[in-house]
Structure formats: structure tokens, C-alpha cells
Length: 348
Image (cartoon, rainbow, N blue to C red; front, top):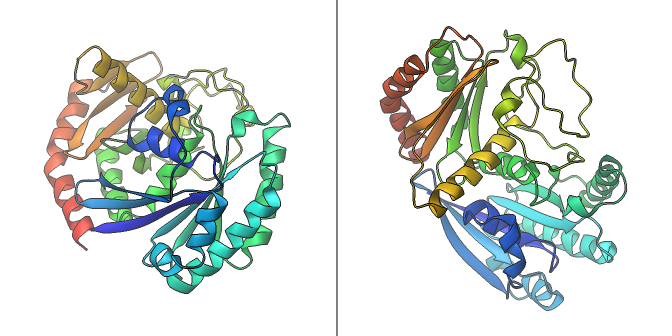
């Protein structure tokens, strides 16, 4: 099954860098070596085994944009599942950027009226004003330019977890019957008495689905998948303590009540993706292979293990009486069912 993903935006807005970071496992420090995209670069990214993302990275130079909107219009905008349009947050030519965007949106409505539209306000790390204020301003401009078209806007940067947040939600819309996976994650969570269970795609470690025990005090801040929000004001490293005591990392998120040591960080999914991916890269550099991870801390226990050939699952429990061996046993017993579910989901 193929899904066409159109990645567009002005030249230098950061499209190729984010693609390299998410799908090629390159660290942010290496993206400065990447050159500008010439015309259209097509990549077939295998995601979840049989789901193939046909990613069209479109060069943003004016000559190319004019061509996309005239002679190549039918080719570029036909059969699109998702349009991802990237705006540089502090662009000096925002009026021209919006003009090209509205023309692309018109062509998309004509050739792929059912395509989902995601707008990324990128390079938020460069913003000098309060990030939330700037993102709100850009979001208002984009909603006005989009008219009646339904859009989802994210503020992103390659230097923190915000990019994983955006791409996780984008990819989630492309997975058929993702709700079925979520329902069975609920069953796995109940069997483990888990506070939270998170399903990751194996290569990118993007979040596919989550399940939380909403009756647990630790899950009061949970949402099924991360929604768009302002970026944190600091990008210092984080750890899996996001699942235990709230970290001291400064952010635009309102302060949490420290009386509950089990409150969960709203950005925990993306932070975990970022952390594990960095750890896998470290393993690669030392010629070691990453297989699984266990953590037994004062606040919680966590087990990360392979669930299917294309996914990893992270189980977090705050009941210290539950052994990691029991969590691993439940994962092993669930593997066959999730392999079947994943196969059925991609075939339907």
C-alpha cells in the first residue's frame, strides 16, 4: 500500500533537513551539510512493513514553484494523501510564501480534495520573541489564508522533540484502522496494570498509537496522540523521567502540581522517541545492536521491547510490585496478535 506525501515550502525553510532527521536517522548537527533540493526528489520510505510512504520533497525555489503550479500541476497534486507545507517562522518574504501556499492549496483541492493538510511553522529555535506569541500569530495568518480548508498547525524545530510530535500525528493519519491497534493496546495495558503503553514504528521511532489508564493519577494529562502546541522554551536533554517526577526543564507548559509525583509530561512521547533514537545511534557508533531496554526506578518501571518485526512497545508501570519479567511475558504473548492486526490493518 502506497501513500503519497507532498512536502512543500519555500527554499531554505528546512524541508530536507527534517526529512533527513526523521527518516534517515541523521542527527541535527549533520543537516547543515545538506544542499538545496532541485526540482522534486522522490523517496519511497517503508513504514510499518507493507505501508510505503511515497515522499515527494519539492524544491522551493520560485522557478520550481511556478512550474508545479502550471505545467506540472496535475502530476504534483494528484493522488495526494497528505500535504505538509513548511513555513520558516521568521521568513522575510511571508507574503510571497502565503501566496504560493494558497495557490498550492487551490491545486490540491482540485486534484486531491480529500488530502489532509499539515502546516509546520519551522525553525522555532531561532525565535527571539516569546515562542507561544509568535506561533499564535503565524497560526492566525495561516488559518486566514487557508479559508475553509481544515488544517493542523505545528511549531517545530530540528533541535527538540517538537518535530517528532508533528510527524507522529501526520503519519498516524496515514495508518488504516489505527484505532484497532489502540483498542488492543488498551487490552495489553490492562493485562500489565500499566499506566501507559506506547507503540513506536521500528525505524523512525515515531509514535503510532498509545494507551493510558485514565483512572490512574499519572495519566490525567494524557491525550491519545500529541496535539499541536507551542514549543518548549528550552531544549536541554531529557530522560525517561518524563514518566515519573516532572522534570525541571523550563518550558511554555504551565507548571504542574508537584504534590503528585506521578504526573506525566505532555511531551513525553516525543522526548522518548528522541532519546531512544539517539541511544540507537550511539549503539551503532560502537558497533553494537539495540534490542531492548529495561528501567527500574523509584517512581516507575519501564520495559521497551520489540512487539512485531516493524514496531517496538514501551510499557510504563508505577506499581513497583510488578516485575519486568511479567511485562516481558505479556509482550511475548501479545506478539502474534499484533502481527495479525498490523497485517490486516495494512491490507484493508
